[in-house]
Length: 254
Image (cartoon, rainbow, N blue to C red; front, side):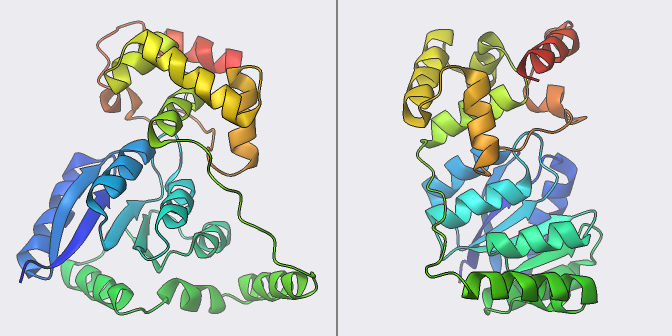
């Protein structure tokens, strides 16, 4: 028996290696791909169609919660287990809205991690149970249910009109990278990056990249946050002036 197919998404290689060792040693799971960021996760999910995705909430660029939304839209059958340093009410609520099965701390013992994944694959919604154990969050969920019940029709989920590669380009742009830096990160030419941007602007009916980023933020596809401490290593840059260029690009986007 080969085990359930798993996509592991985390920007820390040592953590990925540890989880891979635990899962594969169990004989119940098999890592079919690893990813370090949102667009790598989406590409890997498209290529391998895993049954389970173990997804870090604190990804650089597009957050893990935003990534979970995209992955569930593309394949509602996939089981997603979120991993997070913190599980405050806001994150638990957004995790529920993505359809994730569970939200786990990063420092779980191997046996506890395996048990949590087994439960998720069996259909258990432990994230929902976690939410109902918090009175303030339970009141918020009840209010949301009453609000939805009072509407004549459910609100449609915003469709994702961008291709995986176009989302990757937008992901990089949201982190303040220039066309040259995006080309280096994605191993394509600058002209290819420009072509992708042209397609993004056409699809989103925006005039420039700032408009496209803001459009994506409003629809929940992209989240702009502070640069990750692993950003330079993640993007494989060798440019000693990267930090200064990235800061300037971010100021331009802002």
